[in-house]
Picture 1 (cartoon, rainbow, N blue to C red):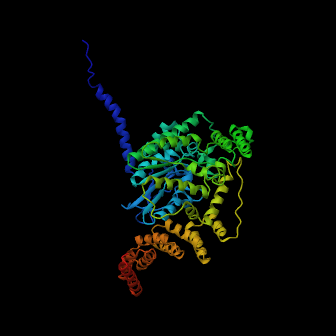
Picture 2 (cartoon, one colour; picture 1 turned 180 degrees about the vertical axis):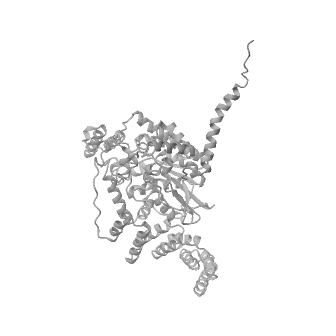
Picture 3 (tube, rainbow, N blue to C red; picture 1 turned 135 degrees about the vertical axis):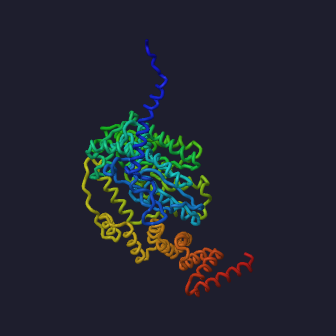
Length: 587
């Protein structure tokens, strides 16, 4: 007699066979978390020295590498912002690569630094924070990975200037630091990298492949590390992959912000066109590569005065340049199409810089090399975003008129910073891809005071100490305009230092720059509201600006805190007399 087998239990067995491995993996993940295994690199971290302040994580790039030794030495610029966002604060977050970060000038010569300076002048009574998460070597994958953490700090708007690192940046389509398997695989990596189990597998792979990635070596410039001689020909499969990567990531980034009710401003990209041959021709004649041939056509047309023809040829040369450290023209088409969507504003940086360039062709007046702007270029980059923000109405109407020409004279970059930038650019240009073989740089020789400080900075001396010495030098020389810039930068760098802000206010007051003096004095009072001298100083600013009632209120506060209030009472009587005089005149 045959026995009939019961198949009713088969679905249960299949279910167990499916669930059990997942359950075991989940247990392993929980165990690894429980014992504190693995790494965690949040975008923003609390500052250990200044209670109540956050800053971009200086180790954030390590998030994308199995060990710190493999990561390039790049980070967002150091800056602090309050842990708690005030209800009266307008917060702007900047995203992008090294051009958005301000290389080689640093924070105060960047989009963030110049924008913040511009906003102080035109909105002196408004609390505005500009937080920069940009850094070298990253592209739209990193920007996408930062979105949720940026949303968590409640920005009122986000500014994006990115695209030049799309092919050769970290995880880029053609980089030596690229992910493998295309966009889908890279997006999966962005999701999985925070799992402790994934990190364990990374460590095991590295353990059995101990050779250090040559791209992580610190012996050459970052550009030399990531390029590895990679040629990405125009319209090739890898070229198209870069276009898809940029368009897809930028769409996902902006969509997440818009869905959260956060307006986004996205800039078109500018890069050099004339006065620097394509990278593909370095060490060769122009005729050896199609990009070089187009560049030569541009030179010929320029010499003949055919400027539109020259511009088109130079742009074609850039697009044909196989060593893709400059975004192709198609990226700006992607940005322009994206900005047609609700909640996304186009910032036409390229047109702004082009309109300021000779014959509309971007050259060394606005670009230090391939993509990093000169001081003038960074100013126009910032001005483009500033004007777009004003036109949007998000921040309201200007409280104080300050022209573009005035703003250009007011950029917060001093002579030491300019010299440091020149040194960094010289270092960048001393290696591939600007030269076929690297050359040794000789130390700069200068006898100026700023030059001596430069030498000390090149030897690793602290930036803050050198800036304080520079401030003392300008004050001693009675160069108040330069002293005010340095004092303002020091206060902006050390937001929690009331005395830095008080010093900046005093120097601006000495120049009769009363709105800026009031701006920095208000910062001192936010940090030390009980300090009677700061109250007296702010009362003076308000009086000189004609705000008599505000001045009186501050004087009365100071009177109750001073051991000897005679001076405060004298000014109280004076302000009261002026108020009575105004009332009698019916003003």
